[in-house]
Length: 300
Image 1: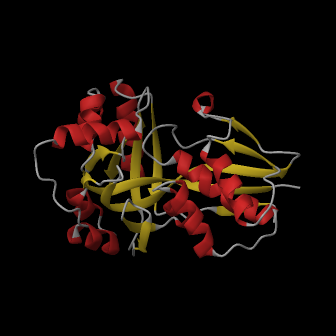
Image 2: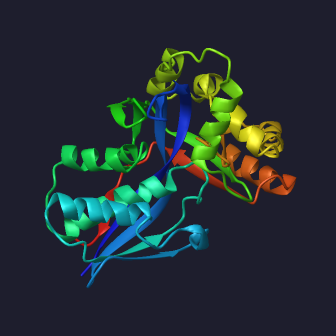
């Protein structure tokens, strides 16, 4: 008996970052879109907690209790006074260390899978509370769709999306550490006044209307200069995607995956092919948004 949960990647169509707080985090205005690239997390009864992983980048995923999915299972079990006697298998398809919240997705997937496996019926609010304690992106991985994240990104307000958006994601050869990118952001901002992060009304209107051209003009990521500073070759990837006909491109989250907004599925295929031919990325993936959050696909 097991339960499998499918959980999506995300792209940040706006990531406005404030200055460093006393606790080391940053206030954000983080507009999330869930995209149709998925990991699957399968929870199976076991004598104790164990984690395995398969798929692209699986060798980079920790299999001990530092794994976010394992931490999610432990947190849920502790909330209900249980032992985390479960085996978690993560089937990866979201790029690892790519700025698309793969680890956060796995944590949300593990929470939903274990909750169903153990028959707990934990409320959505309780699950979101556990998610927020695990990481800033984990709550959005649970809910999916589109949302504005404030605070450090964990306080979510659902957003309307008026249509389907088409994307190409260029996966870099290598990864970037999110804490390292934030440290570089702080270094680059040293001696300047960092404005309070605010969501762009122009961007929110474009999402609500399903207007890809308007959304392309409003995309922004305050972490992009820091990511480019640490991974300069991403500039070549961004230039190649734009030259191939993308409406716009930006670094996804903390990178190093780059995201390109395109007009339609045909354009997506053409831009992906051109990016691969350019030699500026390891692979290129097409996907649409918005996508559902963590969803049970097999089992209870």
